[in-house]
Image (tube, rainbow, N blue to C red; front, side, top):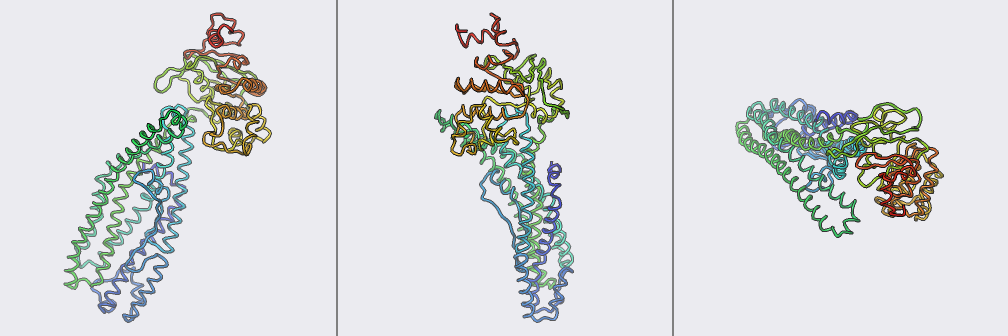
Length: 636
């Protein structure tokens, strides 16, 4: 899973390589920082001549030593001060100290807010100009990686079959896009940067310990054992950490889903006085989210404690070893600064290796949820690669059957056909399967038996883009985006002119109210079209469908929220639109049904009658006649 995660980072390998080089430079400078402190103690305070220390300086410090040769103690102090001034400007630290650059957003005790920091992760082991440049460079790279992965995941979610969202929560999808994708940041740096920098530091410190302090063998042994001990202690908890991280993310997603559901249905919540119940539901989910995160954080704190106990225990032991070496004159007084400076750098890097694997468990949990979506089937997976040379002129559903994933049978051996220039009405009682039958035409659902064809070509062999280009769908519940009237209408035809947009609005009976809005067609409609009535939303959605260039237009209950006058005007406009398209209408209102060239009557998931309104009404015992009689009573 980690290897697969890194494939998303491949386009950014040059930038990550620069980050790695900058980190190695910063660490190299930091490793040299303890030595000037030794020079001050040994050659200024203790007045030892250069080269008289019982512990030799390593080769990488030799250029600095050569600069100090022949200088008086005052001269050595002046030289070290000059070096420190340069160091403060370049790396933000004086000799014997370390500085760093990092930035974090405000965060709480939950996975979601901490994920925001992962989306902006950037740091440097040094400060100053070098640290600032490294920080800004890494931040830009992090943003690029996260932006690309979020875009890819969102694109995959939009391509999911519609039936996925009958069971899956929209809030969960939002959580995956916003809070699971940042896991890629830690995977990137913890695999490609952190181990290489840490191992480089450990190698330099081990080699320096053997080179300069070989007279004290116990120091070499302690330095060799510190890293593996810290790493092993954290490895023991990785499996449990991964499981608790997944549980924390699932609980966080449930909380997000509760908020999304409550706010999307705010009108119903307030109208029914269910605010207290909704608040209680949110409180329960939120409490569970924090509880599960705390369980994960306990492991994190335990790992930090174990990683800290070992270095401090070894440091306590080293104190006595170094004291004995000083008394025996196997070491100089200035070596204290070097050894403890190196030791804590060693412990820090060894801890970084252990924490890396521990933290990766949380990242793996996040990436697993990302991969669950990326690996799930989309509409395009069930389609072929064929295209149609011309716009569709005929649609046919042939002996199609369909059952939903839970086993519910929706359609059995249904069939109908329609051609451009016709209006086909799908009619039947509530729950008969009309909408599911209509869903077959654009491929929203796939028949388990039978087939759907466009101009005789099986829908499954066509590119999904070809199907969507030829079939447009206007849903019963009108969808309006928080955008302008113009943008909403032109959603499916971005190249439409102003004249075409206004013509579509006029045909749908929406032009008058659209112009009456405060800013006309440039008025933003609010979340879910909050500034419009239900009927206005429906007319706007119909205008969007009419503006579409698709030769097949499916309207689900287009006149349900319209008054008789507006309905009559719309039906007449739809009839005029038949010159260039096939119109499939799901309808209950007789005034709409009568205008159809063909009525397909659906009952219990089967097509029981097909014909014109007049033909079907001529059957006294027909199912359609009974349906009409129930609507009109004796007047029929």
